[in-house]
Structure formats: structure tokens, C-alpha cells
Image (cartoon, rainbow, N blue to C red):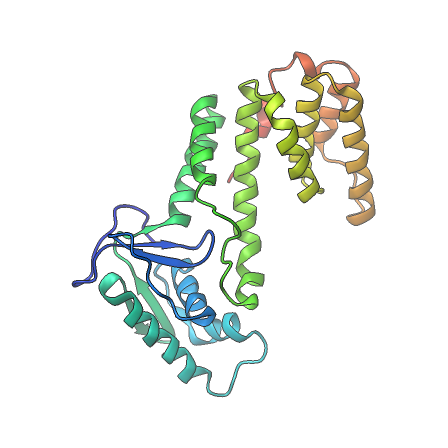
Length: 273
């Protein structure tokens, strides 16, 4: 699934595809392609996520209907693909390649590919100590998410694909926060991190980052409270103890060391997006 310059098939014009919000296709004149219903957007998303590989009829049936596909599933899938071909026009080619279908989009832009490229540039810049560039790349990557990914596909597809996409997004958020902490932006980060920890209470890296921001704002007691709350959640929900990173952060708070550190340890910058 290339993510470079858009390309054209026949007379269909350039296309841009989006899946990091509602599944959409847009032509080069910024005209949005009308996609007829959740089933059609599910088929398009499945083909795009396969990155040019064949998506079998069985896989499509699972994403469209879950455990209860209709006896006419083959004919219905054919109908959805036919509608999609007509709606996309020459902007993409959907090929019947047994045991399923594959899409060819040439060099059309896909927001997920652009996100992955920017997130990797940000991660690498963070690892290399180029924190301003890391923050900028990761901000640009996260701006590609207008809301929840795959928001107009079937519940069956969302259940299968959304967790992986959300993990990519959250890892990019963590890396951006890491870069911003290194840049001394702890005051601005407290409110954002408080919300992130509430949304992801078992993400120890986010919790350690919140502890760091609080401590560097002179709020050590609150930082310790955040640690103990996380330890209780981990024990109650997963039956595990806190990991190494957040434990080091806790010890640094106790030893009054954290406020003298520029940010979290350099090891935390090596998380792969």
C-alpha cells in the first residue's frame, strides 16, 4: 500500500484514501467519493489494510458478518466489490484473484502509510536525541487522526483491526510526550497526560511520564499517588507488579532526583512504534 504521490488509473484521476477516521476516498479535486454503506466501506478498508495482498472471500465474510455469514455471502461480496469499483471509477483497480480480491492503488496517498512513515521518523529522531524534530514529526503524524479509526465499518471489522491501530496511535503519543518532556514542556503536559492515564490506566509509560511532569512542576506528592494508584490497578486487573521503568521513576521521586533530570531515562525513547 504505497504512501507516496497519488497516481491515476485510466481516466479516474488521483485518489487519496483515509482509514484513520471514517473510511473515505477523495479525488484530486477534493471531491469525496460517495461510498454506499457500511459493507462497502468495510470491503475497501479490508483491501487497503492488506496492502496489495489478496483478501480471501472467507476473510471478507468474517469482517462483514462475523460468525453468521449469509448463505449468499459470495454473491453479496461480489455485489459490494462491484459497487466499490463503480464508485472509485478509475482511481483504483480491484482484481478478482482467487481465493478473493486485491486492490491496486498505484502511488495513491493512504493516511495510514503516511502516519507510519512520520511516526517512524519521530521515533528515530527521538532515539537520536533530535527532540524538536521528533516532536514535530509525531505531531504531524497524530494530526492525521481526525477521530476513531475505521469509524464507519462493521463492528466485526472494528473488533479485529481497531486494537492494532489504536496501539500504533498510543505508542506515537507516548513518543511525542517523551520528546516534549525532553524539551522542558512539562507544564503543558500535565493536563494532557492526566487524561491519557485516565483513558489508559494500565499503560505504565504514560503513568511514568505523568509522574515526571508532576514532579518537575513541584507536585511530588501527586506523582507518588499516581504510582500507587497504578500499582493497585496492575495488581487488581492483571495480577502483576509495576515494571522497571515506572519503578525507576518512583525511586527517582522518592530520592528527589527526578526534578534534576531533563526527562525520563533515555531507554524509554527506544520504544518501537
